[in-house]
Structure formats: C-alpha cells, structure tokens
Length: 136
Image (cartoon, rainbow, N blue to C red):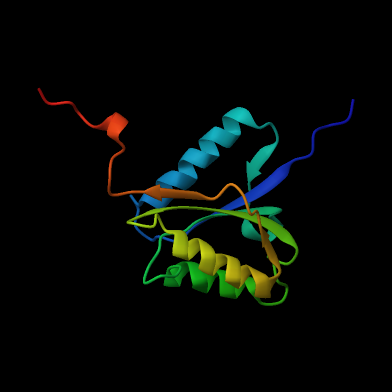
C-alpha cells in the first residue's frame, strides 16, 4: 500500500497582534486540518507546497508586515514560484475583500497561484444573528 503524500502548508498572518482575528483564523484552520485531513503538516516557509494567508485589510490593501514578508520571500530563490495558495480574512464592511484582491494581484508577479473559489470573507465586528442573545 502506498503511503499518503504529505501536504506542507505555511500559514502567514498579516496581523502582528497576538490576539488578532486573523491569527485565530489560522489556528482554527490548523486544528480543522489536523483533525480532518491526514498528512497535513505546517512547515517552514522554504519547504512549503501551499500557502494559507490570513490577511486583514488596511487602507484597501494587505498589511505592511505581510507585504514585507511576501517581498523578502520572493527574492531568489522565489519560494512562492509555481505554488498554490489560499486566502481568508475577517474585517469590516467588506470582510477584508480588498486585501484578497490585492494579494491576488501580487501573486501574479511572484508566480503564486491562488485558488479562485471558495472566497471566504468574515465580518469580524458584527455578530451573526444566531449568536445574539435574545432579551425578553
């Protein structure tokens, strides 16, 4: 019986806050993957196969720390070249959507291939109705 291949995933958080929504999204994704998909390991960036970006939206773009990390890792040898990637975000009115789109633009130049669907945008500052407490 052949062994199952190991998928190496690097999670990059665009927020430096220790208790950020995006760090929480990465931790949740790691737990879900460890429990449901055999063979997932979160490795160091230089050995990655897939990148998983948790990107807040700052001024219609990605955060400066995330852009800096992407830029440094794109220098020879470009660790992003011909790799797959996914994005998740949580934010205000548009749920971080503009950071998604800017990351996709950046990915074109560095040869990083983002999955197109599903797109995941979360509204971090508004609780969904099902979690609201009913007051009588």
